[in-house]
Image (cartoon, rainbow, N blue to C red):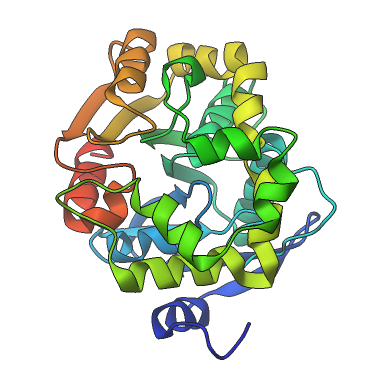
Length: 289
């Protein structure tokens, strides 16, 4: 990584390590604490860095990782990035680290990895015990989500062209639109996020990384069924000012899982863990009991 990386990103990197997996090197960060580990799963297009201000607000042991293709992890190309591979890699990492019981907090794209974990758990196909899951601001029900124009372009035949044109100015403009009016994207946050997105030219594969949206349509029956029928404890932690995973998505999840506990964050947008880490951590603590 370039020495020009922002100090906050360099500090985050220096506090973690890389694990070799069957898919490539995966960056992980761990904190000590009580009980079974809480695993934080990030979304597109960002990384585990999103949760940096949440981890120290919890008394629990935590684990964050950057999925393959994201943040500080390897970014192979050509490559077909899938939710199933992300889930396989996560299971491999947890096995390598010796975790046998886990709670999961998932945001955005990470919520699809979480629902795949739930589907596998229903089939008794996990090598660990999945105790609780918290889903946060993920467009799991695509028909109810409001995809951004740039997402639609990246998913179209013009996706490779759009990815080739990515630059810091365009990134900041699009990323800022995901934040709530009361908690706008800060300049230093935008710089750090771009450094991670563009690390190893990751911005050039944006069209490959966002293919998970198509999987959400293709495997809706499997993943919606997991939300509805999984036997564990499921909670929903939602920024209500989200322009993508809107309250329409949240309503759909409530219909699938009427018994799910819900913590609403009325003034926060698509990145509640960045906008107000304290409120997000409080919600996680409430939902994980």
